[in-house]
Image 1 (cartoon, rainbow over the protein chains, first blue to last red):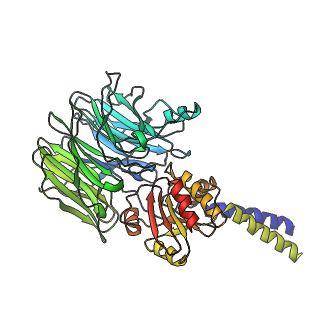
Image 2 (image 1 turned 180 degrees about the vertical axis):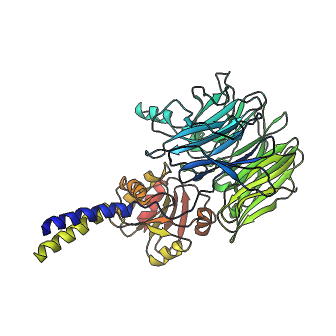
Image 3 (image 1 turned 90 degrees about the vertical axis):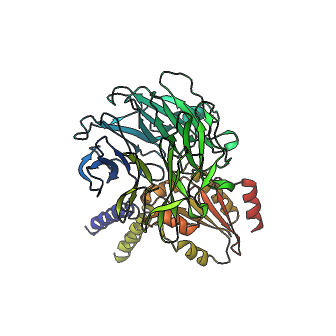
Length: 393
Length: 158
């Protein structure tokens, strides 16, 4: 009898030790990685993640910002990407439709699925989420980017490793990952079969994407150029065109086999092209801005912003005519800051950088939004919640 | 009878330790200094890595081999995934043939940007990030996969 009890005790101790080692890491609170967007009525919408669920809520007024009417988009809890450059994404169409994407991390390391949910009744209800890509292998489909064109065409782009895996099987060399995208012309009821934008992208950086008046998408991402150089590439993508031209967008020559976890930002310029901001490592480490000619695909010399010794990075860009705002995050010995610079001539010349927000605790990356011709900062912080501030410059 | 139960008890304890891998030490703002102090006068490699970084496990494998060939060098691994559970991290570490002696830490501050800043203002979050200390604690910091020629040369001089 005693032996039976002892054997029972052994089993119990083994079981207990498994439970004890299965705790969920150290306590880190809720992720601060959110996305915000404004609808035509000036209502501020937010997508966030809590306890494995993507949540959408809204603040009808922005003075002050008070969120309510929370919707849970996924019914089953998932491990949702909120680390580094990962976050749920939100875009609002001109007709008021709300679109949300996110990355679910799967058990295999680096693997994931990109999910999509929409509201076609102005945020009253959201659809059952669906997976955007048709490839369902448990491999990398991560770092979703989302944009909707003025005509209502939805683009979802992501980092995808199917070509790396195919190359490995064929014993061929393949650097990095690939950029894929899918498009919806029926307000998100369905998505096209995914198509490849480029081979050899960086594996772990966000993709910057905008959708144009003509219904094209312009994407910028960190790319692996010859010799393992991680500079940026840009491409204009149209579902009607079969070939996609890849253009080199930055020339920092950061040669590294590493995950920078630091993707770029873009904004529409005038008829001439696009504004770009990005982080570069290596000898010339820092945050940079340049203009990209959208016809000739030639970029202006890179202009440095912020203090590299204060971790200047994670840029946001916003444009309205010739006005351009560039915001980024820096750290001091005691606080996190958002700094801002403004140009009134389409990015040719810039005013001084100023600190526009500060927090003592943990904070997200800054986002910039346009409301009634005025620029606003949206910045999620642990201590004061979502900072919503008019950018006075 | 007593001795039998004692044997079974210690067997159970042994089994439970086999299942529960080495606990990860919590890495906070003061931990780098604490580690440096604890290994004063000893060469060491302080390697920051993530389960989410495709280059990290290869790098840790290379570092493990170097440390096995040069046992004087201490290997200190710091996982930066504060939100990951310890089984996830230990599962990743099991893929590497680590030396018999090493330390495993995990980020344990809510503000990981600030923690990184307190470790090194010139580290921007790229991984792997590694600090090579010689016996007098002259440090070389590198980002990305190590240059094998340099690494062998460095370890050979230790």
